[in-house]
Image (tube, rainbow, N blue to C red; front, side, top):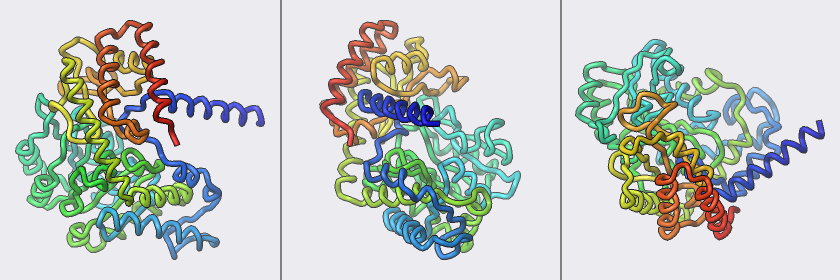
Length: 413
């Protein structure tokens, strides 16, 4: 057993080295602070606390109640909502809880197609719970990769879903929450905003909040929020006006509907991350994330690359290589050799997520390291060099060394 423990510790150190020496540019990844990591690794992981504050099934939860209430209070304050549940283990279970609470089995839901930048849990057919156990209606984007709200409205009025799950994982433009609200209200549907990718940007004031438009908001707590792997489900005032029992329905769906005891170490880390997001420095961080993404976009376009939707208004961008007859998988692998970590991604017109024509890049993690506009121009040049020379291993290794040197100037906490 000791040998296994030593092996795991060694692998953790190797992963730490990899994160320190490469440019993490997958938009859903970020670096949590030391305080957040310490909370996740704390003795709180030893405790069981099934139930909610003041209503636990086990004794010994006085301190846990205080911690969970702290996290709840921070979530309600920052996002401007009257109810928050911070117990979901991650985003997918949180979305499952929302469906479970608000849509009867076999009911109809509507969301953005995976190939157009949506998420698996937004009704992707056949292979996900959301597409198997609910009737799923999916809308997409036009050939430029932009949502046509008139088409969404037509589809919604034709199909009349009971719930619209609106959120993205690879859509670079700002969502029009007001328009989605009008569509949902016109058919009496629930509007759920999945802000997992953009929660930090919303708190930084660089992306509009759905709190005045959606009935329910779900977010993961890592990504741009820089917290642990967890999730929060929030019911807005509009949601309570639609159904005064919505908060209790959500709570019952999370526990005991879908899960047992919450992960108290994660709860504590969420509280820490939210408190960090309430500081003025976090607003500057969010502003820099978007500024960096826009500079990176401009440089890549200047270098001749095509971008889905023409650019970005948030933290991520999607490059389309169809006109170059390149595969996103191969480009992403070549970039990894060069020390630049991205992911292959579908673009409008792609048939398979396994052989997509694009890659997805984001600036949250490199901005956390302190990189700014100057570094974005350097990084863009490296990306362009790899794209133009996808099989030149020597070039890729040389760039990897340059990446290491740059990373040394922006050490991690």
